[in-house]
Length: 127
Image (tube, rainbow, N blue to C red):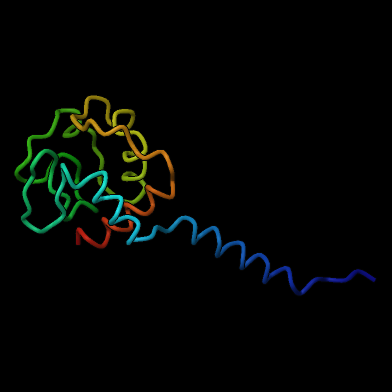
């Protein structure tokens, strides 16, 4: 007689939860990463300055190249990007590869966990 394992659904649920957890970022690590890698050029406060790069307040859901108070490259203005978690991750991984001609000199975050952490921070800090 063939036995059916009742543990299989629990194992699958556990594995799925682990995968979902790996894809979501940690806001605290993202804030540290922002402070180390991004803060010298970007601010996140509402009506904050655009010192070297654009202010990121309200970035999620915004069309690229449209933040007030910053002079964007033609490449960024013409990119057609609307920032969401996916487009931010692609851009953060390789800014010049995602938007050739961008003025951003940052080389990118190659590790997906760092991208997810930074995006988790931005999602909260820029609302």
